[in-house]
Image (tube, rainbow, N blue to C red; front, side, top):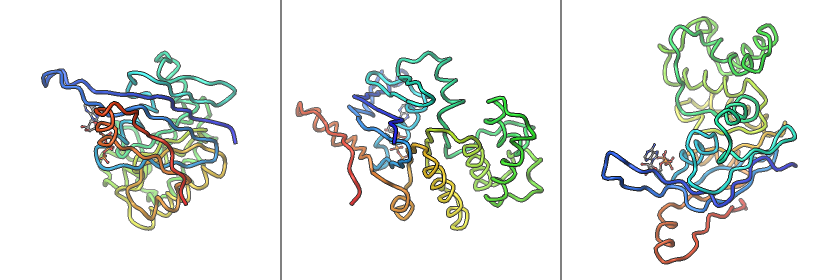
Length: 248
Ligand SMILES: Nc1ncnc2c1ncn2[C@@H]1O[C@H](COP(=O)(O)OP(=O)(O)OP(=O)(O)O)[C@@H](O)[C@H]1O
């Protein structure tokens, strides 16, 4: 299967300018790759940098150094050096991202929120609407909510709208930040099936899942995120290892 994501020597720090310019070393020498049809899961304790890595893979955060090469549609783009315009194009066409929380836009209906990624690709509403409705149905969003803005929806309903939106386009790359965090068992099962279907069609998936049963079902590999180990090793002048680990 073709290589979709190649991360090399990735480093990311945050500088807290309003707190004495303290520097937080979050991602240190991260190296991994993800092929089409693979689901890798970021594995590390709270604060290890999992969400930071996912946001950096989406171009939300700019890395200090290293490269994130994304290959799809016969081209390869390094997100670390890409122009903002190239990053936006990549997000529209190549990278889907499901965050934990829906960014609610007042007065935009749930159905429009879900259809938007496909509409941004220029697809006509009559083509995309059946898929959006199908996703909403699969995710058990009652039809009476489809024409309402999701701002008043429950946390779990908002998360399911977010998931439907993230699966609206068959992106070659999918980034999933705890997509099942506030879902009940039935809806969790639906989301796992959607993720498996995306993997089947060849999506390269990077996810964060805290639930061990979900990780075991979905993960082809774990990517250990060990910020504390990295910091200690660094102080001993050793090169911290952030290698991939195959699941037995
Ligand atoms: N925008 C930011 N500015 C400054 N520091 C940040 C920022 N985002 C994250 N951090 C810091 O980076 C570290 C890693 O945070 P991150 O959210 O990536 O961890 P995580 O592994 O996803 O944790 P969790 O499992 O609890 O969600 C934390 O110490 C956090 O305080």
